[in-house]
Image (cartoon, rainbow, N blue to C red; front, side):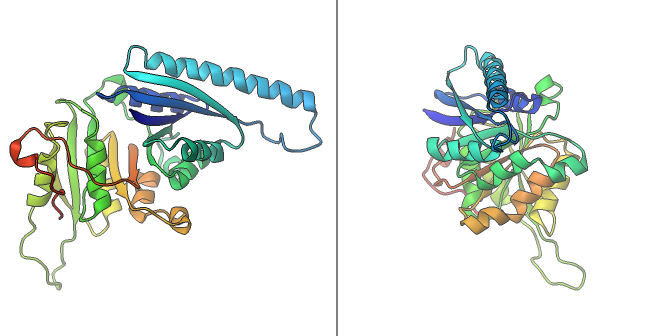
Length: 303
């Protein structure tokens, strides 16, 4: 059974995140925990009246129950076991604490805003959770795909690293369907006029990686993009192709590393106009495949 946590504060962004998750096809049962932090600003201050705090907290609980009911309705009839966890405390810290306690494979939450400024600011809760959460994190932004304006468009960052391979592995745990457009994207540095470099850039590794996704995303293709910085190249690519989701693998990090976060990951979180799926801290396993040649338990090819 796959364990997933959805964080909600009752906002439209949080409901959009849950709706996005509800549309991802899956075969195995999902144990879905909806987490709500009950937080009244200033409640720790002694000069505030106790009755006032109790009244506000009761309203928070009622709002949390209503938000859970809306999310529960999204998964009606699905192969999902739902439960609701409410905790008193600061929203971002509470969500991370629950994730550490439950140890889910994925945590899903919404991010507000589409403008350049709002994307850079991201939002204190989304930013903190994405930075400190020990599991994979999906930060959802509305792109129009949920309104059935177009099939889902996904870009998966690919580079010569185990985290990038693990990102492909985690993506392949869901069956995305024949209509989903998937691009496995690798940024390549192109030398300037006065610099020496390889005579030709081969797309074979990234093409083969895309083919390994054939069982879950038949339309997956490999793409090489010229860029000196993976993050900048990916942001430009997902915006030019109007992608709905970008998937990126991140290496396990120390506490300091989590604060700094990976340059590519943070760049995508702050600048990509679409949802961002960060996969982290997982072992590379064999991909499900539909061809005998790809069924061998071999690691994905490296660029």
